[in-house]
Image (cartoon, rainbow, N blue to C red; front, top):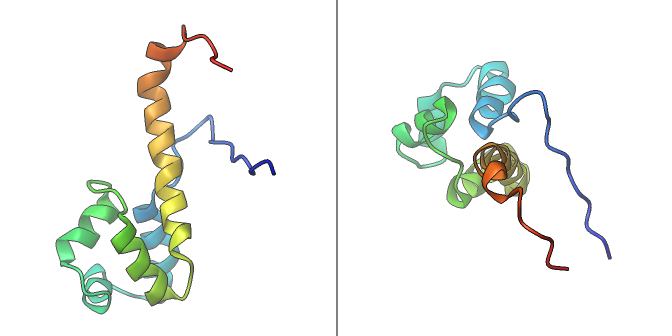
Length: 103
């Protein structure tokens, strides 16, 4: 069965998990980074670095946020994957453009 393909935005970098966490969860719910870090039992600097874009979303953090906000951890990992692919495309495409398809 074919898998559903997602298209990366072409005009801007995808929303990072940290941006999503800040803008769609912390701000509307009136939560601080320190409070969420305490509730999901992670060091405050981990959450701060994810939100500021200095650290990527890990599976561990995605599981914790998923549980805390009653949603799938896959949501957080999908956001990170989109950002990773966007960044990799901009870095790698020039080096692989000459590759021939194998199959």
